[in-house]
Image 1 (cartoon, rainbow, N blue to C red):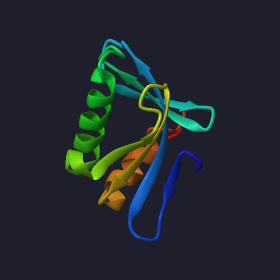
Image 2 (cartoon, rainbow, N blue to C red):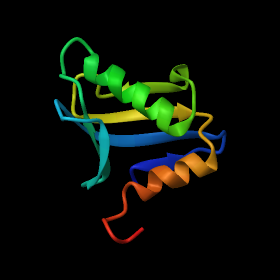
Image 3 (cartoon, rainbow, N blue to C red):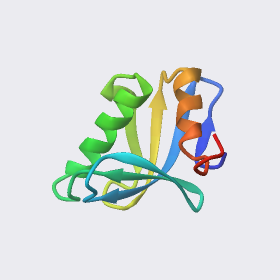
Length: 103
């Protein structure tokens, strides 16, 4: 998968397309070469980025400090680095990219 890249040191790089201002924070399938995520926060003063990192930390069962935004702090197209996510959590994340009814 192009949007999820595993490194040999156990870290993961995620390519995401963020949609701030949504009613709730949730994954929304693929958007081109990125995993789309709707964020229940406005794109003001870093609020959407904070919701994004908190949501991913909870979803992947890693501490918030294990997630860094490598690029796209002020863009919808974001590349994130995640350290310490287990295989079960990553498999669950990969399933979010599957079309409905295919999982």
